[in-house]
Image: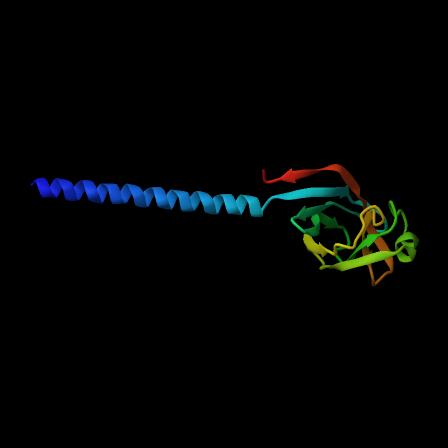
Length: 159
């Protein structure tokens, strides 16, 4: 009977050690996930209508050495595909501004899509490219524009 008690205690001890190891591994995994998902909000903006009805907002985030431009809650009244452009202008209230401004074409927002994420090249200077335009290559018109407000002190998410 004495040997059964010792075996039970050893099994209980081993289970406790195993539980501690699993808990530590799980906490380490959670910590890595949290640290990996931290990002800074570098700039934000709200879309205003130009040649189409619509709304939504945009933000630029930085995670480590990478930056992304995110389109969020986009609503376009005409439900057409739009080219996402980062333009070298503070705003664009007409189509001519977007057509003539220096721009970086980021990609296409498919018709009916309400959000998108585009990688930003490290060379893109947000003090030069200060607005995001949703451009219609079909009608050569500026559908929506969002002036970017660059954060003075970027806000860290995920802390």
